[in-house]
Structure formats: structure tokens, C-alpha cells
Length: 245
Ligand SMILES: Nc1ncnc2c1ncn2[C@@H]1O[C@H](COP(=O)(O)OP(=O)(O)OP(=O)(O)O)[C@@H](O)[C@H]1O
Image 1 (cartoon, helix red, strand yellow):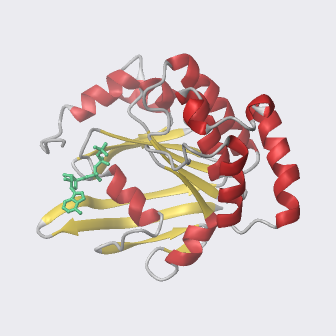
Image 2 (image 1 turned 180 degrees about the vertical axis):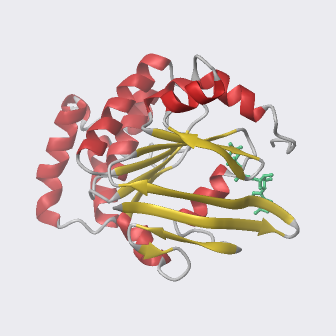
């Protein structure tokens, strides 16, 4: 069953086509990497899928809902973690969880046990009363991801979730992604880090608003005769004419 489908999706800003006829179907539990150089159109595409921006043309369904007509339902059924994740720095770990659980409308009785379970899974039980601002960046990212899926959405959108941390911290973060995927949560992730691209079940590479390649990392490496996703990416991104901002 596809959790996300896009069919010839386009977004124009005036005469400029930011997203140019993109199509894909993403299955339940799949980890889909959405790659592209700066300015390729990733954020614009993701905003349409999240119900935050109305497409210029094309069709799409997310979590069973239409991206034109059912944007409010989409918002309720997805998790979203942005580059500048949305945690409140001046609240403690527990206060942040409670706040987001409230926003997502989780039953009051369920919040405390679920919070405990999540903190123990993260190994954060000793930090439950720590202010978020004093946590290391890698911990904030893990907490932010866990908060984004606290309501067990069908899918989660991650926009460059591991910016600024080293490969070891990224690997740890990815253990959480694998956990979520095993529980059936579909993961749609944008990244600039090619070690992360290798962790995805499937990736697409966007160049100048179009998807120029889409397959598993292994198949793409074979197809382009490259020994890494980084080499595949460089080969395709080199063909871009659009300047990034
Ligand atoms: N509201 C807007 N009005 C006009 N042009 C826009 C608007 N939003 C995005 N663009 C343009 O669309 C193109 C794609 O931008 P987008 O942010 O989607 O790229 P991206 O792949 O997410 O890049 P990055 O990795 O830098 O976030 C860029 O050239 C950008 O300048």
C-alpha cells in the first residue's frame, strides 16, 4: 500500500518552475531519501506533500488524503521535523514532550507512560528535567525526532534532520529511524549527507526541479558505475544549470 503518491506534481512561482513534474509512490515502512543540491526543489516538494503549499498542477495523496482538498487531515496524520527543529530551548525535556503531546491531541492518561517509555528508549531518563538548551545537538535531534512521532503517525517528514553532527551521531540517529520504520512508520527524509543516503531503502535525486534518478542506493551505484552514493550524486548534480541559493 502506498503511503505517499505523487503524479506529475509541479509548483511554479510566477514563470519559474521550482518543482517540475515529479512522480513517485512510497510504500508503508519505507525509508525514502529525497536528495538534491541546494535549490533543487526539495523543500518546495515536501511542503506540498505536507499540505503546506498548494501545487500548481499534478496530483498527490499522503496518508490516504488528497494534497489539495484534505490538507488539515494530512497535517494530523503526519509527523514533521524541520532543520531548525521545533523544540523549546527554555523548557525541560519532559515539558517539551508534554507540550507536543498536547498539540497532537494525545489522551492525557497516555502521556506519562508513553513519555517514560520514550525516554527509556532514548536513554534519557536521567535528563528528563534538563533544559533542552543544555543538551548536546545530537541529543536534541533524537528528542526532536521522537517528539515528531510521539503520536505514532503513518509517516514522518524529516528535513535535513542531522545537520551539524558527525557520522557517529548520525548513525545513532538512524537507529531511531530504523526502529520507526520497523513499527510501520514511513520515513521521507531530505539530506545532504551521502552516508545517510546509503542508509535509505530508496532514494531519489532531484536536479533543477526534476527527479533525475530514483532507486535503491545499490542499484543506483551499479547503474552509474560508482562505488558510493556520493559519486552518483556528484555525477548527477553536475548536470544542474540552476544555481543554488
Ligand atoms: N516562495 C517562493 N517564491 C519564489 N521562488 C521560490 C519560493 N520558494 C522557493 N523558491 C525557489 O525555488 C527553488 C527551489 O527551492 P527549494 O527551497 O525547494 O530548494 P531545496 O532543494 O529545498 O534547497 P535547499 O537544500 O537549499 O533547502 C529555488 O530556486 C528557490 O529560490
